[in-house]
Length: 365
Image (cartoon, rainbow, N blue to C red; front, side, top):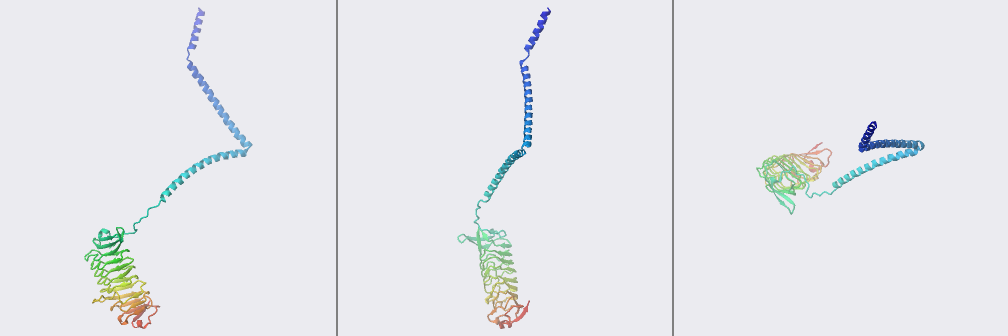
């Protein structure tokens, strides 16, 4: 009986062992193999590092120069890589700059329109004007605005303004100041005749002719600035401008009509240096048939004047000052007022001439 029990127990144990899962055995076996492989790899890496260290150590001890060269070679490789990157960046930047320069250097179309600054000019809408496209010029016919200060434009519609027409300004116009710009060549007859509110006239023209009676009877005109460039002033241009006291004559004036400044009392008359002749057909004597003589208080004659006519300033001249040597006196000396005081600068010459000695001469500094 005991033998049978022992046999049963043994049989059960055998069956239990046979029924255990083979997968568990395989997993356990795989884990053991992986652990062994990792240990083997760590060992190999450690051996490799030890070998490399030993090799470098041996190389540095046995052949230090070769070791240093090897280190330099590695550094050069690194530096070369950095330099290549920098060159690439520089090339990109230079390319970008070149593109910008190419854009900047592209030819710009030339502006064929005239260049000028009319920013202060009275707008063209304040004038009635005509455009001559064949002659490429504009003529202003009339002022139709309400401005008190009028600056004539140099250009209208791209064409130069060349003239101001007859009766440009009405007698009851509000205009108090007018500026004549560089391009104007002609102010026609009676353009501002009788403009009672006009007080200031300034010319900037480079070649200006002012026709007969252009500013006649402008009774409020008290500030007249004739710029260099006025070449011709017609007869009676400023006649009866009774508020006008000071007049300056530019050196460019080569023709002045009779009585251009007739019928006014002038306190101070000056001439620009450069004028050489003051003729007998002077604009400072009254116009033909004029009853009122001009009354001059002081006249200054520049050193450039070489000849002067005796009847240049009419009968009422009170005092005249010469800034240079005595000019040649042309005409009958009795036409020159005998009571006039003639002043001359100390050190100047020619005043001992018999014609001049017959006048009341006063030396001054």
